[in-house]
Image (tube, rainbow, N blue to C red):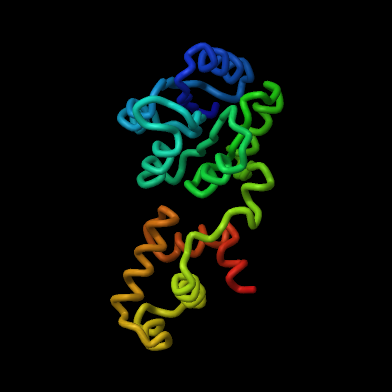
Length: 203
C-alpha cells in the first residue's frame, strides 16, 4: 500500500478523494491536512510515500509548502492536484520539484492510473510545462558558468578561464543553486538538465 497524505483546504473534496484512493486498493490515506502550516509541522511523522497537495491553501500555499518540503525530503513523491489549468501553475510545480501536476476535473480511474505511474517514477506534467516555455532564470554569466560546471571545471579553473575571482564564481554558483532550490553542484546540473536549461545552453 502506498502511504498517502492529502493536503487540501476543501474538506468535502478531501474526504471524497480519500474514499477514492482507499477504495482503489493501492493507496492508504494516513493523514489529511487543510492548510500548509500544519502539513509542514506534522508531515514527517507519517513517513508518507506520496503527498497530494492543492495550490491554494491558507497559512502557507501549496507551492511554498513544496519548496520547504524539498529542502529536507527528496524521497516522497509530490503530486499537485489543482483546478488551475494555466501553464504557469504547472511550470511552477515542475520547477519546485513536484513529480506531477494533475487537474481535479479528471476521472477517478485516470487519476489512480496517473498516481500509480508517478509512484513508479514517471513525471506527469502538461507538455507546456516541460518545453521551452520555461524561461531560464540564469543571467548570461551564470549560463556560461553553468556550462563550465557541467564540463567538470572547478571554481578556480572557471575563474581563470573567465578572468574573474574564484569568489565571484562561487557567488554565482550559490545564486544558481538558490534559483533552482538545490543544495550542491550535482543537483544543480541534474535539475538544469531536467528542466532543459543546460540542453538549450549547449546549443
